[in-house]
Length: 168
Image (cartoon, rainbow, N blue to C red; front, side, top):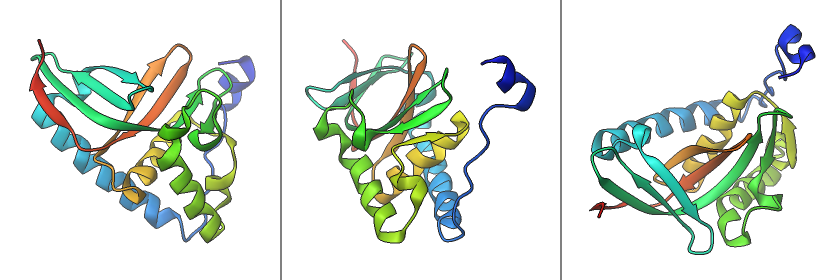
């Protein structure tokens, strides 16, 4: 974080249009319930993770040795240095097959005129990225969302039905 950000608090929250704000709130509540269920069943909050873009899966391994594998989508990434969000629907590092949920949000944004969902790159605080991922989770009927660190980036995923096994 640069001096300017430390002095003035970094990027401001993006104001949502009045018609989108209640949907974001609903999405966050929905994601909270899904996350609590996954955490209770297989310790999502403490699990190690990896993504295979070629196969299109995310794999979690919990401290208790539970392996959870699910189809994955990349909603977007947050650059902690630039403090910006980049949607997965136009991201150079996202395999096209893994951008379907992000493209669904883009189509929803275009249909309803929500610029925040149709602007490729946004300056916003990291916490707001959770709201965008939660909206993707709700709109796409995903089974959860996750944020994984990758250097100075944070990757925001949605994932589908989870298959649980005991890790080898």
